[in-house]
Image 1 (cartoon, rainbow, N blue to C red):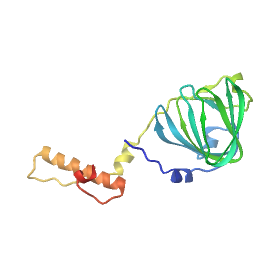
Image 2 (image 1 turned 30 degrees about the vertical axis):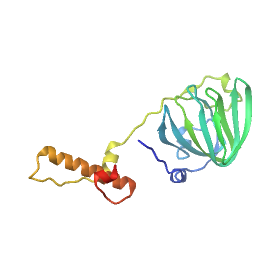
Image 3 (image 1 turned 90 degrees about the vertical axis):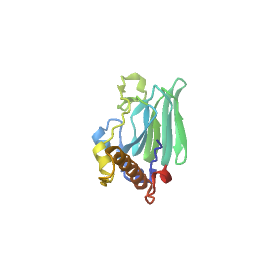
Length: 196
């Protein structure tokens, strides 16, 4: 199944979190970041913040970070020691597997990440996250609200007395798939053969 994300629309839903600190609670960060979709063993995320983020690392893979808007410093602590990298809109960073990293962006930064799971965090303002015990994140889990998804579909009710139950079920399923495909693509309703 192909997943399509309207990044412009998703980013418009987020608020810029000003004055971010590593110690901020999830409730304080609410509305400034979003999980957009599952990806491999992690997810695709978007965030907007100004300030200093918490330390994190991903033991199971590299993290891709695309800077959409703004500028800031990416602080990385790896086997090679600490590094401070200036990043700005249009740049893509590949954070190596297992490297502790965080952003410092006093004027604001909007980014999209492909983040492997699980992650580890240090939500303290320390210079070296290796000096404290990290918090463990959980694997990303896809949760669907099936009631909401089914409510988006239009129910077709055209039962014919001349058809057997099996024949009618086939017609209902084909018509439902055709209608659902038309609703998802925004195209006019066509026969099943034309849609798939």
